[in-house]
Image (cartoon, rainbow, N blue to C red; front, side, top):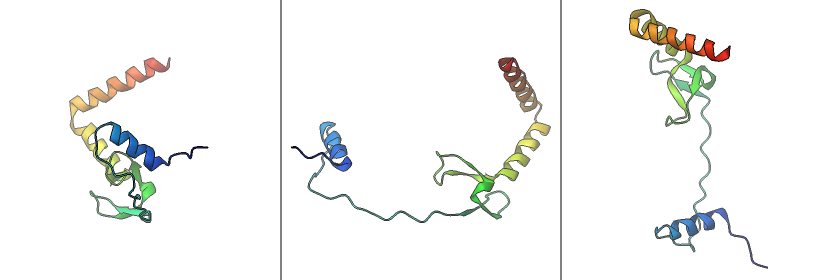
Length: 102
C-alpha cells in the first residue's frame, strides 16, 4: 500500500507544479513557536495593558490594533464632535441599519 504524503511534501509538489524549484529531500525546519505576549503598549497613551484592552485585527503585524480601546473610543468621539461631515455620515449609517433591521 502506498504511503500518504505529508503536508510539506504536498506543498512542495504544488510549488513544483506551479514552476517553483523545490528540493523534496530536504526536511522542513521545525522552529519552536514564540511564547505568546500577554500585554502590549498603546501607541497613543503609552500604557502597557493586557491584550484584552486592544481590538483584535488579524491583518495587523502583531494581530492587534496599536491603540487601546479607550484611546480608539476617545479619538472616535473627538472626530464625531469636531467634523460635521463625519457626524452626518454616522447618522446616515444608523438610519440605514435601523431600516435594515425593520
